[in-house]
Length: 191
Ligand code: HEC
Ligand code: HEC
Image 1 (cartoon, rainbow, N blue to C red):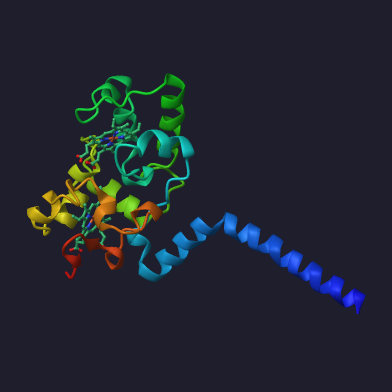
Image 2: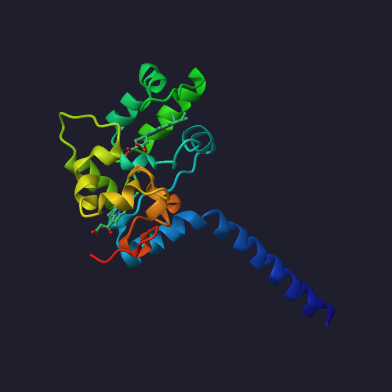
């Protein structure tokens, strides 16, 4: 009887360990599962860098590194550019700037390790000769959003098209599929 209890207890403990391990990797797994179901086409790896969340997701949604190519991040993260960042001063400590730059470059849309189809699509549609720092200015992005009436973008609950998370309810997770789009004061988007 006692032995059995120990066996059960250790099974439960064992399961506990397994659960912890799985939970650690949850985000990645969910992303993969989602990709399988709704198409990797519409997902990028979520932001996993605390410094990035702190420094680059305070004024606006934390755009994932996989949404722009390396050269765009390099330009955006130049000291001069950050000092005049879309009309704001977004300059940061030099050490932090370099840390974030290497994080962004390592996870950019055209980085070797990036397997997201959405990232590849974005990369492919940007001319080699241009270096956009606003993803909302890229051809891919414009084409995907050109049917949305201006009043739905300009409205108080959205404000600008760069406010991804206002309409893409799962943007934080890196999911941009149509299934998870809900425009404030409009609802689901039917193509
Ligand atoms: C002081 C506020 C502030 C901080 C801090 C800040 N930004 Fe911004 N950022 C802005 C504003 C304002 C815009 C323009 C948003 C718009 O068009 O609606 C912007 C736009 C952007 C865009 C373009 C969005 C698009 O597609 O139009 C990117 C990319 C971006 N920021 C990245 C960053 C990164 C990376 C950092 C961290 C180094 C950062 N931002 C920190 C204020 C800030
Ligand atoms: C005003 C609401 C709104 C905002 C803000 C918005 N989107 Fe979208 N997005 C849409 C709608 C609606 C579609 C679907 C267009 C279609 O399929 O006709 C879409 C489509 C997409 C798609 C293609 C997915 C698909 O299923 O076709 C991607 C990727 C995407 N958006 C990324 C972004 C990113 C990144 C941002 C922020 C920089 C953003 N969106 C901001 C409404 C929005």
